[in-house]
Figure 1 (cartoon, rainbow over the protein chains, first blue to last red):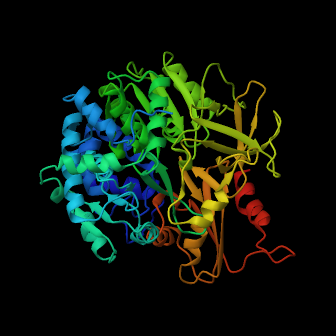
Figure 2: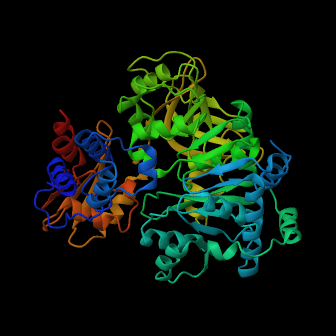
Length: 79
Length: 513
């Protein structure tokens, strides 16, 4: 699976999204109500553990991580 | 009373002279010195005065992302003699429109993207773009004339809070109130030019008054913490460490999320010296975790509604508290007084619960353009019939403990605090009731789980995420319910009212058990 697919599957399972057609790789996870602010931490923990990387406070500040694609882009830049 | 200055923006002139090239504010993109801030703000003020009719009754709305540019705009508005009105950049346009209707601003200052959004509203005010306002030269003699004719009772800012009928209300705060409050806070807690403040508050909440004006008073630096970091408590902690933040004035929600992340037991913060918190009740367990991590820090529990320039009471944590105890909200700060009155307006004895009523130089002059609700909330001190002595009725139930500290017990109405945000449940009800296919609705709050429950009487099938998306078009994100329960008909009491107790029992209490 690609990084994008892995993250997408994790979010779909973790936040009970099921087969909602509105959930796409470029949908804003927080504005569109798929993930709440507490869930953001869980996503970061997941990618840090899965890919043995560290997402720093500077990464979070400098790069948007609001969609599956955006999160995947940050992860891919570190692996 | 701190009489040296008339306008709060005079503090910037003094800071520019005393601290000139020191960094006043830093955000994720930029930093600005005190003299740089003064220069930009005066240029903006000059352009503003050329393009619009400014003055003490002509407020300026500021609709910008949280950044240094916002601060330039606040200062520029005050240099032009107009109160600034900070707006949430994420506020739904319908709410922005309702606010503008009450405020009747002379201008809105925004960025290009904001102007595009606001153009559709057809506002009866000039919509000006920030970048186009800072290009002209400052007319300092014009600004000096404005400052010389200002009075300290003119409004420095107007902040809009949730209103119980769905219309936001504008709390009007004077320059005197800002000056007295900041002077008290910076003196009391020895804030110096070596301090570094880590700003959490959004500008449309009044904790930002401290973050901004403390820098101007003392020459210290305020770092605007990127908002996204508050979603990631551990990374936020790293930020405090790397930026060597020495003072934070946060809502307890953020402190709680940092404590709950477990980072406090894994990493020490060496630079932090003063931790102020206000806006909601701080739980003892998480407070103790912070105290264990920062044993050399001073912790201060603070209390104050927007109507009283941020803070009225404070309590320096001076002993260990154990689970089950309530942290006092303390004693009044300088220039402020607190009375606890019973239902007949008579003072309560020690230990007796009553409504907290507050007075002093920090009290708001009222709600902008809203004399009726002002009259209900602001009263003449019933214990003084000799001269005008206004009190604000907070609606908070409190009592005075034996040691003189005031203890908060709860609310007398349906106002709640959620993650530091003040919310009138009626505000949410008004928004939900206006949605299609909703026959009736009611909103309740679970203090145990800190969740807003919205009950809908409807024949339609409700999908929570989609309904919330509709609500987000008219309500700020912090007012969106965590749980929605829909049913074809509400249970009623014998008198015909919605049986709230039954709903609470079936959907809130039993669910939590």
